[in-house]
Length: 254
Ligand SMILES: Nc1ncnc2c1ncn2[C@@H]1O[C@H](COP(=O)(O)OP(=O)(O)OP(=O)(O)O)[C@@H](O)[C@H]1O
Image 1 (tube, helix red, strand yellow):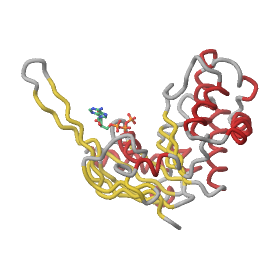
Image 2: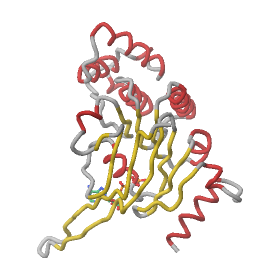
Image 3: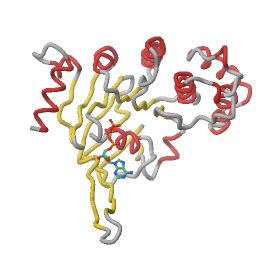
Image 4: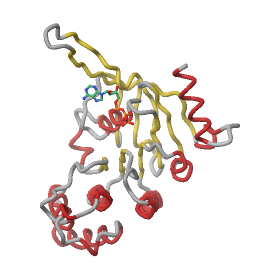
């Protein structure tokens, strides 16, 4: 299978300044030399404790943040320097309310994003109709997003992430805030994308979800990879993936 995501010795530092008078410089190594690759059609998990560097990694992979060093390639292109060639072919779903216009309806939000991707008008409305069905928003599609519940906003974000029919979908904690039915809907969407040969990279703290969905995963801690493999390979002789995860993370922190 073709490699569609490649990270080699990838690094990202943040420089912050502390103190008002002294302006002491502080360098945070958010991603500190991680390597992994993802094959086409895989559902790949990026796991790690709060602050491990997952979001920073996803931001680099989705062309939103420049790496400090290392190789960061998506669809065989550099995410920094060749971002224009990547952006139309991928999409991402971050939590929160980012990327949703609350003064527009779900349908109009999706029309707006479809126009940004220059999806031809004759395909646009039909595609939007299908996606709204898929995320179960068809019944409220023409109400303003400001009248939606949190979970509905999140469904709208999922819809937005599908609008350009992306080859790779990146998701940062996509099921947080969804009710059980919504979370299952999202897992079904991920499985369906996989059946269509699409690739999904996701972060989650839900290890049951990882066991259910992910073909492979990496666990990162303080910016470094501490384990990689299939869920059953990482679970090894432990009773559950959660046990293995806790031991791995504690082992590094000890
Ligand atoms: N803009 C920034 N400026 C300075 N430091 C940052 C910035 N963004 C992230 N960091 C730091 O980089 C490290 C990694 O953060 P990141 O958001 O990538 O972690 P994460 O694994 O996504 O965590 P979480 O599970 O809490 O979302 C943390 O120490 C964080 O404080």
